[in-house]
Amino acid sequence: MPGVVVVGSVHVDLVASAARLPRSGETLPGTGFAIHPGGKGGNQAVQVALIGVRSIMIGRVGRDPFGERLRAALQAKGVNTTYLIEDEEAPTGASTVLTGENGDYASVIVPGAAGRLGGGDLERARSAFDQADVLLLQLEIDQQTVATAVAMGKAAGLSVVLNAAPAPADAAQLPARIWDGVDVLIVNQVEAEMLSGQAIADGPAAEGVGVTLLRRYALSAVVVTLAADGAVLARGDGVLRYAARPIPSVVDTIGAGDAFAGTLAGSLARGATLEEAVRLANAAGALAVTRAGAYDALPTADAIQAFMGSSRD
Image 1: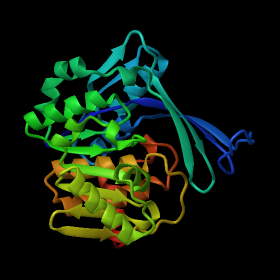
Image 2: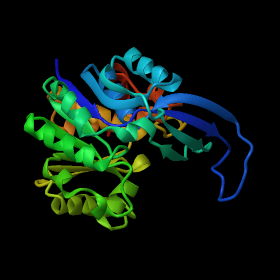
Image 3: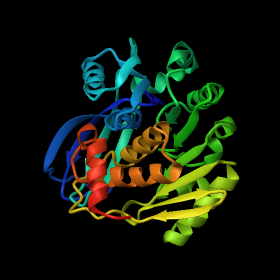
């Protein structure tokens, strides 16, 4: 069975909803509150499992009720949590999320136990790399740990996919050795602008930024997601544009990028071409915004195929 090993964060999402996001110093009446399992690593691992690919999560949670809840939620979605470490000192990480009626959101992440994932943990989880075809990473954990995981993934012969989220304010802050092993970089518009230092005003500008990142970091491929404007795939042999798929309405955008990344990585593990993997990921990201939350908003393989059959790129 094809497999993806995901190294990253597992957090609990504390989500407050209002008509719009508050301005600085402003207090708004809310319309709802919910607690969801989340964290980019956990979200992406769940998405991998939902499309029928072996999903192995390497991360840390606290020895507390939130940690227990997150482990159970991952297992319920089919994720292998053998390498999800229970930290005896730090609490489970949390994301405080604010959402508006138009789907906009803002969040503050307190990594907690997730931020303590280190090279020693990866070494003890080395057998997980032998069970996978693709390594999927994000930047919600320590960057040196990400760099170590990249090196281990390449040594194990895996394709390495990095979702550079959240992007650092200064791209030079990232350890240079991260780029030595990344095959596919996934970034949204904001992350692409931060890593390239170039603004994206429209589709052609996004294509140019994708090419800039491709050359700057000597990558095989760069995918820039553009929300309602679809996505761009830049490779050495050219640039492809993917139109956004029409949806009836946006409920919230939490987890949409993770649906995209998890579907892309899982599809590559199953042997899809990169072009087809991006097409499937584009559909998964669109579906994710039509439902609330993270894990429960992520689509299955059947849902993605049905959605693709009812719409076109």
